[in-house]
Amino acid sequence: MAGPDKKLNNLSYQVLGVLARKPRSGYDIVKQLEHFRPAKTSQVYPTLAKLEGAGLVASHDVTQTSRPNKRLYTVTEQGQLELIAWIGTEPDVPYNRDDFLTMVYSAWLKSPEQVVVMFEERLKALDRVLDHVQTALAVILADFPESLSDPSNWRFYRYNLQHRRLLQVQTEQTWCRAMIFQLQKHIS
Amino acid sequence: MAGPDKKLNNLSYQVLGVLARKPRSGYDIVKQLEHFRPAKTSQVYPTLAKLEGAGLVASHDVTQTSRPNKRLYTVTEQGQLELIAWIGTEPDVPYNRDDFLTMVYSAWLKSPEQVVVMFEERLKALDRVLDHVQTALAVILADFPESLSDPSNWRFYRYNLQHRRLLQVQTEQTWCRAMIFQLQKHIS
DNA sequence: GAATCCATGTAATTGGTTACATGATTCA
DNA sequence: TGAATCATGTAACCAATTACATGGATTC
Image (cartoon, rainbow over all chains, first blue to last red; front, side):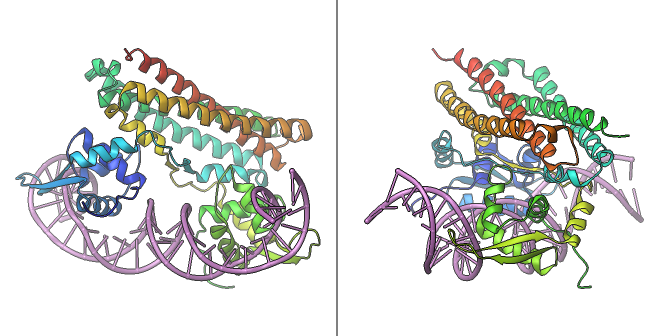
């Protein structure tokens, strides 16, 4: 009815995806996306307002007693259709910015000793990610084992995306250890 | 002498790192970063101007006959010190945006058949990346074999960063194949 | 009483893309 | 002659972060 829908941005589709699983408040959405696709409240709230203006989500206020009141958002049918239509289109080239890799790029300017320290810190940081991912996997496995063999259940993809992260982190750790091993040969 | 140096952004450090390896024009820098840390000319040229204003890089014009004239940039000593001082500081949390993963997040709304097609396309895209990375590795291995055991040579890190990318792409391909295998069990 | 969580937003700034503008040289 | 590469930039817009602003409820 309104103007011709131009393509939404990545965050909008991600928010539609979260709400397609279940209705949530802006605050809930931020928490939900924290590890998978971080976004600040200052970006999420305006995005929700924009999506509501376009008729892709709807909201209603919920009065709470033991908590501040909140506004629950739901995907509209139009919103779900928009999301489904987008999935499977040609994805934009992925976008990665990692200070650590930029540092490694110029690490030849530092002594091997100093670089080894950097890689050891990186390993520790990856350990923390690993912990988080393994816990998430264990929870799904314990609470919803049937969902893991059902691609029409959103937990099927949630589990497998976490599993992907696990594999990636382990690969990166292997690489870090190989780098440390090589560098130590040059420490007198 | 001038104001107190506040932290530069990721691109600035990346540009300093490129120029620390060897002097280049803005155009060269864009090409150099194309696969590792993409940036458009419209971002690189202003960044170079800013770095020059801060005294971290210097430039001089080069007259060419068989090509348009160009401006070559070099890192100043101050620029190199700034870069070295940054390396090893606590890196910001890495930043990843991948439409494909956002699509997988909501792929439970699609039929397994349709999702299999998405993963097969992803595999093909990863094959092209793999090709590029393997070529780059082979070139270094053939032309500068000694540099691979010398952490004070920038090619040591160039090679190992490419190797990291190789491992990551292979891990992702393994995951994609496992996903396709699982999904095919649900196609009647 | 202080810290943390729940809850929703706006304003200013930085980071990054798209589109625009121009022009020489080389190669098919 | 037309496409691709080399070469440098600006303007307008979109994406994202930082900082600001407020306030009730819970937990330590």
